[in-house]
Image 1 (cartoon, rainbow, N blue to C red):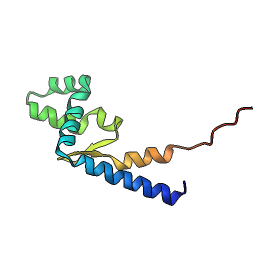
Image 2 (cartoon, rainbow, N blue to C red; image 1 turned 180 degrees about the vertical axis):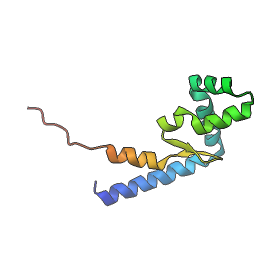
Image 3 (cartoon, rainbow, N blue to C red; image 1 turned 135 degrees about the vertical axis):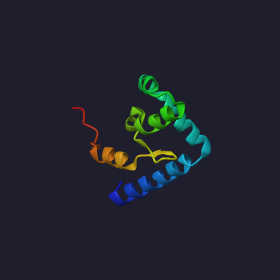
Image 4 (tube, helix red, strand yellow; image 1 turned 45 degrees about the vertical axis):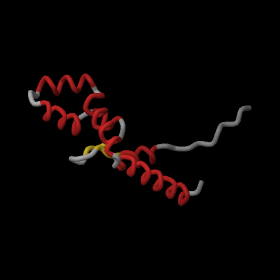
Length: 101
């Protein structure tokens, strides 16, 4: 696939993902996953904060899941971290299949 075609496909994929991320149901699932997904970190934050709202807010901004899954929280929504995706994408090198001799 040429660079232009690959870029077009990637940009279209990003548009589809962004549209899905705007859905209320998707946001609810993402937020829950980020808040509750890292139980050790969640327990640590809960031990530091008495207010459950602050625990949730900290989890949405600090959870290790954000980095692991290349997500970010913009203050309202959990979104793909396109910078992280692009960086990971540049690191990938596609090699042709090796010939068995």
